[in-house]
Length: 99
Image (cartoon, rainbow, N blue to C red; front, side, top):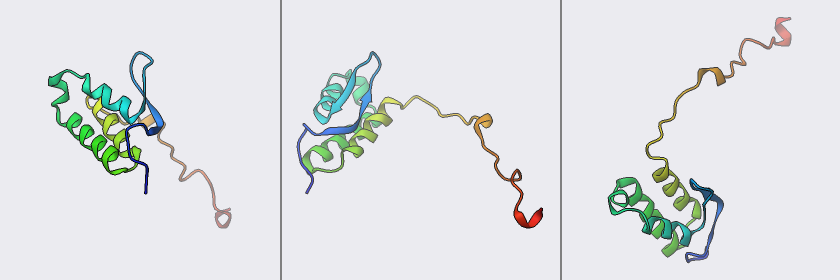
């Protein structure tokens, strides 16, 4: 069974603006507790709080809590498709039978 408790560390720390890091589950809880009430009541933060509580209380994978916090932190960011990065490898290589 996985370890329980808030002293468990994330596999990869969560980087915050201003060179701060969230390293443990307790750090994540402290960060969320210090949010303004209006922001903490947003659905994304409520989901992050729920995931954090499940991981701490039931010993689930820390990745669940990390995903919840990352989604809440990046809730306003919209990913855009960059067509210049698309690799079109088909049509370039010739098969031996076609030579």
